[in-house]
Image 1: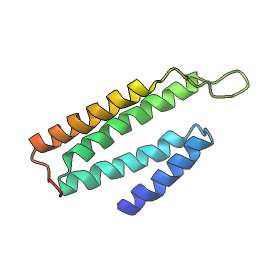
Image 2: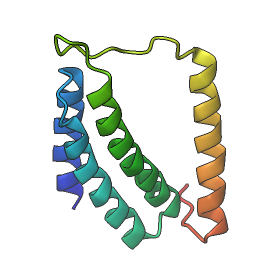
Image 3: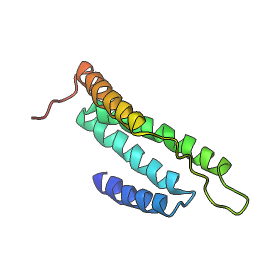
Length: 109
């Protein structure tokens, strides 16, 4: 299962870099494998994180279809700031970690 995650993670990252529309399918496979691995190991924070990312794959695939110009180029929103990134990092670090701990997830030193 971990090998599937690694292979499809590489494919997803590479295809995202070349702006291939079906990158979301490769990342979706990686996230389903991540859900299974984390659920089996009891690492619930990672499991829920993979569930979240799986949902974003569907949303991203749909949005990319709408964000193409007439000549097929992807139109990218450049208004995402460092503040937005820091808020997201804080939320996911504290939020997912707390949820995992509350559900009895494993603590690793």
